[in-house]
Amino acid sequence: MPAHARAALRPPANTLAEHVRRTLGLAAPVIVARCGMLVMVTADTIMTGHAGPAELAYLAISFSPHIAMLVIGIGLLTGVVVLVSQADGAGRQRTCGEIFWVGLANAVGLGLVWALVMTEGEAILHLFGQSDDLARGGGRALGMFAWGMPAIYGYVATAMFLEGIGRTRPGMFVMIGANVVNVALNWVLIWGNLGFQADGAAGAVLATSITRWVMLAALLAYVFTMADRDRYGLFHRIERPWRLQIRFLRLGAPMALSYAAETTAFMTITMMAGIMGAMQVAAFQATMNVVAFCFMVAIGMATATSVRVGNAVGRRDPKGLRMAGWTGAGLITVAMVLLAAAVVVWQAPIAAIYTSDSGVQGLILAGLAVVAFLLVADGWQAVLVGALRGAADVWPTTIIGFLAFWAVMVPCAWLLGPHLGGGVAGLIWAEVIGATVAASLLAVRFHVVSRRAIAPV
Image (cartoon, rainbow, N blue to C red; front, side):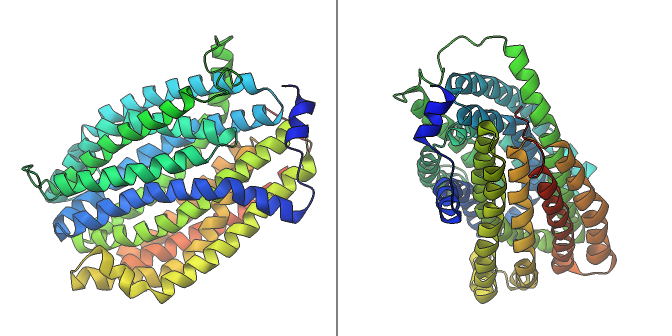
């Protein structure tokens, strides 16, 4: 379909109300899908927590390196949504399918690499200074994550392709169904029902890995049966795939480094919690699970903002680019203020959900008291990263992330946590500082990018 015909079907938004409507229309299903991913983690955390504080600590210490590896790969795969949204905005629909296949190949390959790394889970945790008990139990759980890594990356690449063409609902429905499957498998594998052995944290992770293969199969089934699959070139021969791979890596590599800087910094803070003791790391995991659940709203808004900015770049619409970015930032501010208020009001019931241990509950409450200050800054930095990603401005984002999270947040965490004895609350105050620095620098960068000439990749 020619670009002008495409524009006639989906013209640029001309009013703030229309920008808000379109952003929310894209963001809402993505938020549900991303929250569904966190519901899965939350179910694992809660169900494992009721299997005992030790099992919750094993899950917490294994989850941190897993999420670091996972998010680095997701950063690499962001080239899918950027390239697809720009191609779709420019009316080059057939190219979208070519991008999908290149992204899927990268997803499977990277998933296999990380799976091999995760089989050495105990050695990895010993390397980060964990006790023999935490390294043994956490390492076994980390090894279980290996089985699902190719599947989760394949799912992410497929979901990003669909998000890039504005179809966000399939991922939402798949994720809702996946949570039902995961809870059922948790009931069997964590607690040892239906004749299975109770396996605690390792059982929770194995349930997640199995569920990830179900998610991938369901989403691929949707893509391959779309009525307009030929229009998007899903079964056409890819012309010069190496050229597309170069473009893919040119976008994905710096985003992977950016995500690596952020997630390894947060992983390091989790390891600091582990050094302070099993109760501290269990409480920190529960507190950060609350943050992560709220953050999924930011991820959904960031995805919608990225797609809308990418569409504006494809149309060569500078005003649309600016409005898409700042609309996303404004909407996430409202959402995160409301979520922060909810955390403050319901912090005691929230803490009770994660554990019945009064000592761990007290540490969770201390962390939740600080979380309200973290959410707005964290939401802003996520959405602005999405806006810059849609404009393909990736290297400055990487540098900003490294400065904010490694040069600022990690040293502050050591000072406010283990060094001064600030515990879980001290670690989260360091995250508040790091996120605020990141949000401020990214806001300045987006202002600069939104005023310069548009250059699609």
